[in-house]
Image 1 (cartoon, rainbow, N blue to C red):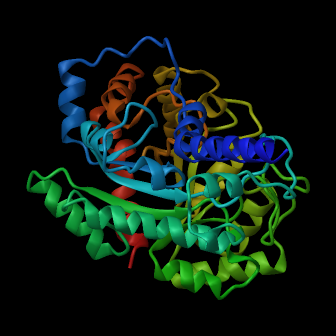
Image 2 (image 1 turned 30 degrees about the horizontal axis):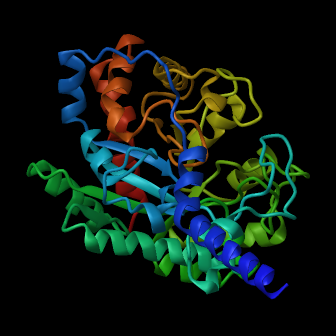
Length: 389
């Protein structure tokens, strides 16, 4: 029996070591896939030249969830975003978003808040012990990871917390340096853990964009994918008012329709829907209806179009371009931007190094070079120059 016990203990140790060593990369590769077998868009000389002179921004990548083991500074043959891919795609500004809780069986129709898959991921990636039972600490740890990568990048990245930081990125790029401006946002405000003062802690470490909910209802109100589909709670109203007073960007992605309407009623923003499609173009639970999109834009907001099939209703670059064209027609060329949802447990239609394909597809669907310059980044830069302090 003693030998059996020792054998089982040894086997458990081997399994545990294998999980810790191989588990994170296996999960990353399994969850953050890329559409296989699609026909690449032909990138003409005109499209390549246009893409090379753009200032491109993407509003949503969940890369920090995986970065403790992946390290975005290195080139990888898996995942959707790393610094070499961003450089290859000529992306100037990337919003990195933190994920702190995700329900089992995550779906777009209805989820409760009683389960969480991020706890296991935190453990197998060997996140600090303080993150295992605190959503706030998970957000702060991912912010710390981003700051660390910026410090380690040798000047390839700049952490954009202010308007001056933004201008530093733009100046460097105008001088021919392909630096990347990194911004920080959160996917839902459950990391507040019901305490308004925790917002100050998040702002202090560099968060500038705040989603209100994610895949489940939280203390602020209802999720588009939650059980209640409710509007803002009293606590949610207090959070929105503080975000507005602090000059933070409010991300309405994943908010229930009622929560979005309630937020628009008490705040002038600034607002972004950081990764989405248009329900009038793609009829899914994930997308807001067109009247709500128009109301967000009427408040000066941006609509960031995603790059996965649940928001475009197809698995092609052409479908992303068609969604963007629909948005330009619906809300105007000054209000549509990019929000891929890279590394967000989606099957990406294209990755960060393949941006020239999107530029080519936008030309193919009839957008002018001037409109493409706006959608790909010009609108984002203009918005950030007003929103950041």
